[in-house]
Length: 212
Image 1 (cartoon, one colour):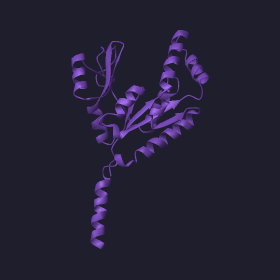
Image 2 (cartoon, one colour; image 1 turned 120 degrees about the vertical axis):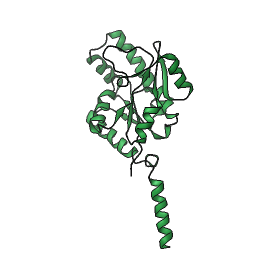
Image 3 (cartoon, rainbow, N blue to C red; image 1 turned 60 degrees about the vertical axis):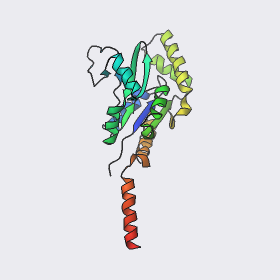
Image 4 (cartoon, helix red, strand yellow; image 1 turned 180 degrees about the vertical axis):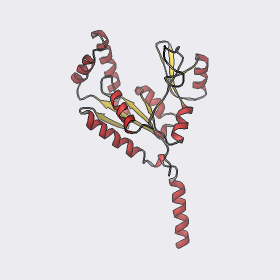
């Protein structure tokens, strides 16, 4: 009764708690793996090919896109980034869930891909814009100008909230974690994630015909 894995898309504006909740989700089930993106940028010191990114050149990246071997892709600051379909396909066929940390545009591409039927998309909203701003300020990672740019980008992300399967308001981290786990648990039981059901129903039909 092996299940098929899920493509779990977790999106949010910066500061809404996505990284923390992704970490908690993986601590809850260590078999959940992050999707490793492909990129045309050069490796940075300490980065390992296949672990941090799949490093490739632009010609090969564009070939993969043309052959529909990318679930999603984007051009960012002069380099290409994308999610190769092959490793994700292998993981979900083996019953392992794959976690995607992507924006609304990437989420839309994944849902429209060949593996779209196995996606679970979840968007995290902050309880308020003031709270979102407070979290960005208290992180003490950016100057005022950068925070304002992040806030503008955050609103762009929030405006696409209605393109997701589930939307959670992260007003309490523990409660949001519990709701997130419930969503994943339920999605794993979807008919599309249980390929063994067809054979089971056929078996029931055979047994019914024997006793009828």
